[in-house]
Image (cartoon, rainbow, N blue to C red; front, side, top):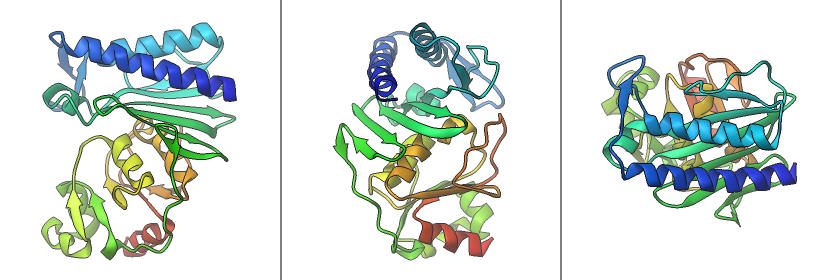
Length: 255
């Protein structure tokens, strides 16, 4: 596993170079399921770059990817890739987006890598060996922080769904922020930059790598009716929370 992790980290750094180089060029932008669900030539190119290199190094791998640029036949030796998480941010801000790569064996997490390209920050989580930010080990999360003590990253629709009134929901927290890149917002919880991430209508590639990092520091996550376990399907998750187990239980008690 160690050699595969070393390979994957270097590959993701190189994919970041690919993204930075193509950011200088005019983007080809299309929409998918909605008018604000964007995909660019860089999303597709980055995904192909990653999958081609992985297949060349390790034949007979399987993939779940956002842009579906590579075929797959099963769930063994599984790479879950979001080539650019936060495509809208990538297009309009040129920041707050990330490359996300999670690796699973026997449907169990092995390692997750999230690379914040614009900040040159790489988060790595290894099952059984902790989490790291630019090779510095992250401390374990506090298990006693409550929702009232928390800086929460979420959006208005999610807060309306969860609390019935997004404006009044602000009284339940210390503060509310929003970024628009699930992988980075989950990693922000893991790094202690904020305490809670709440979202809706996510896909498996949005969370598969970042949740490995989160769990490696004692964090927890829940979505729909599933706790701390990835569902390997191309479906929308109606509700997702990433935090510590105390906050997770608080929110579950509310539902």
